Length: 66
Image (cartoon, rainbow, N blue to C red; front, side, top):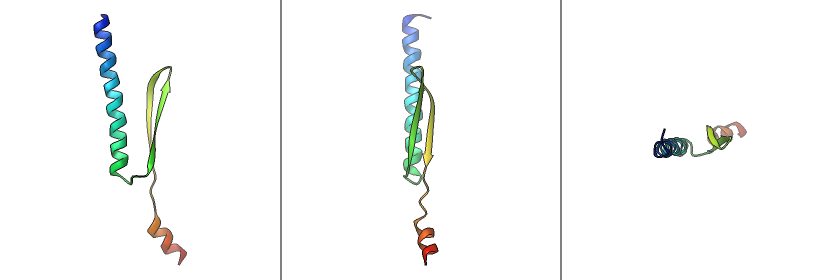
């Protein structure tokens, strides 16, 4: 593999990672709007993207208090 091919492959991989991060953020934004995104890096590479979503139950909690 030439240097140019390596750079193109790296660039494509970087774009895929960015796209995955943006998708996770968009999904969270379109859902409840509460949560977090965690990006796991191992040996300088993104190995995992975790999305944690919070579900707010304000109406249910208010009803239980009465």
